[in-house]
Length: 116
Ligand code: SF4
Ligand code: SF4
Image (cartoon, rainbow, N blue to C red; front, top):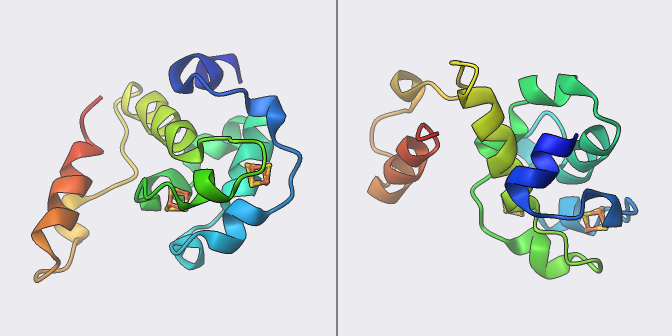
């Protein structure tokens, strides 16, 4: 998916599916696709990845980048996918579904995901 490569600046084909990113992702349990699966679909230019929840759940914590033997920054790939979805006028995040009482920083982070 050339657009994701352009927006993220990452070499998507460096990933060889070792799975270390998914193993270390604290948010993987809440994702419909694991970080390495997101990478694989992007490599295959499978547009179904654009309807995945995973990029919206990703907290950009960079734990995956630290673990990746190939230095792939998945947070940037997730951001690129969010941007592509936002540019279609859609969003994978609904602010009114966020429960009350969540930490303020979580709200700030969620709002930033709405900024194309
Ligand atoms: S850790 Fe890196 S090389 Fe391994 S699956 Fe994840 S992105 Fe691919
Ligand atoms: S940056 Fe996103 S995908 Fe990577 S470990 Fe953190 S939450 Fe998971």
